[in-house]
Image (tube, rainbow, N blue to C red; front, side, top):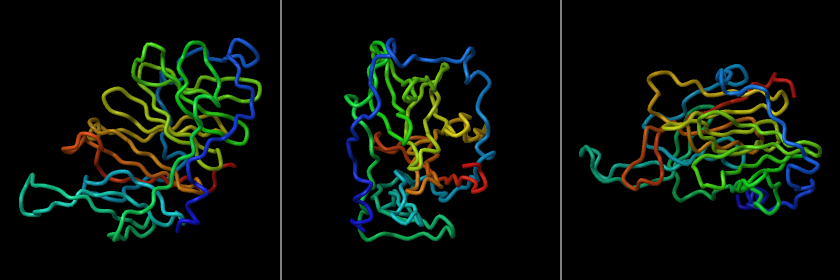
Length: 261
């Protein structure tokens, strides 16, 4: 198992594009209107969406090396008959195709996301560069305002341009880029967050629908499969007693195979 995971260990990738300030040779481009003013397209246009677990006690999903299972942590009541009793934490796996649930004897090894440190990324005015990802033809990275206000601005850097990807009144949080560079994910919102996927081939933005019944829930902890065909995330209504890790149900996005590559 360790051999299958070592390729995905966190690495620092050397910048191959010129990381110059935006007022030099990488002009920043911006659309004439707020691209979020009219909302996002429905994720069902490019993917199938289904729930994998339904206990609202799961957290931190990530895929097995084969992408066949989704590993996760679950709150397990120590006294099942006592409402509001103490909980332990156990590690589980769910088969993404059959829904079969497995309890694991030990904690699975987490596959790290490869991120770039700020020194390898462009500088945008007086914004503070946080972290980013590299694909074959671009960098995607997040910045925050120098004042320290919450939320991020997400950019795409190519050889000859720097494009701002997120606008609007909601806070954006960059999550991950698929291994093939096709999709980028970020969370967008204020009190609660909505999962948004950018199709880098088309430049279109797609979001997980938010029915009124889910208005108090956030889409969080989004992780791609190793092949980039699937995206697992948690739909959460809040925290348990540690106030650190949000818990909820695991959902799966399966991108449609007939999408143009």
